[in-house]
Amino acid sequence: MATHHTKHEEMETIENASNILRPTPSNFERLYLAPEQPVAGVLRYTFANPTPIALAGFLLANTPATCMLMGWHGAGGGAGIANADTGAYFFCGGVLLYAGAIGEWILGNTFPAVVFFTFGGFWATFGATLTPFFVSPALLPLRSQSPPHPQAPTNPSQDAVGGYGDAPAGFYNSFAFFLVFMAVLCLFYAIAALRTNICLVVILVCFCVTFPCLAAAYFYAGAGVGPSTECRVVGAAFAFVASMVAWYLVSFAGI
Image (tube, rainbow, N blue to C red; front, side, top):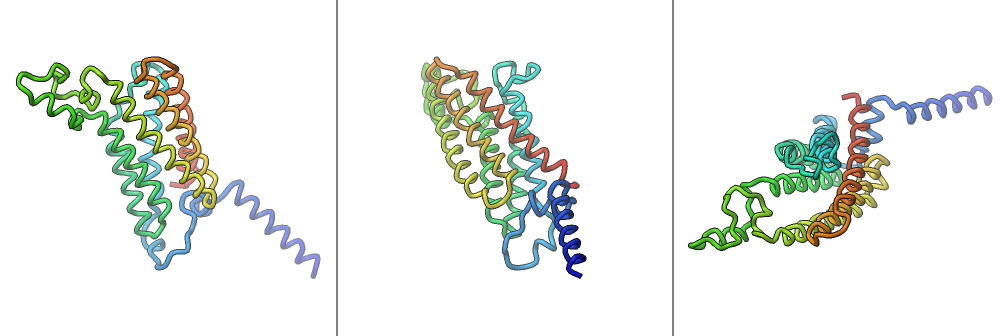
């Protein structure tokens, strides 16, 4: 009897190890996509898992952006120009991440909801910065003067950089601080994610490198000297690694 009990325990150990190495879709979801949290109610049994929605939006915004920032196959004009995917930043990076965040919030998953809302806000902000409609308010007083101020852009559809007239360094230095504080927030999130799953930790740690590198690229661009291009490429490379981890999550989720 003791021998039979020992063999049974050994078989359970082997089965559990196999589930970790090659988890079923349901186990994979519990381990990586939406680890169960002690929340009240039965909503998680009523609604579908919203995490893949947010992941899909993140991937469709982040992956092409990294390719443009790295200049792969001429993407971004070889200069890191990432405005070709502005629509994806709004409707994939913004809308889908918001939708996933709302779903997580309804289910009572606070931490994933906060992360998704934050990154949805980031992509919407990034898209708005590249959109001519969202011209910097600093531009309006210059343009309203008669005759127009010498630094007022002649094209009313210029993007936010136009608000700084002939001195875009001010824009670069200002926007860099947004990236700096995104890095700080990602660091807090990465520490909090240590109790969830390794994949989310890796993604957040990658962005802890990406955002400082991109901020440095903007600061160097503002100064007109320094390795701005190198910082941009390194930051984009780490963001690309984050995308690969997210692609792994989606591809093995049994969606």
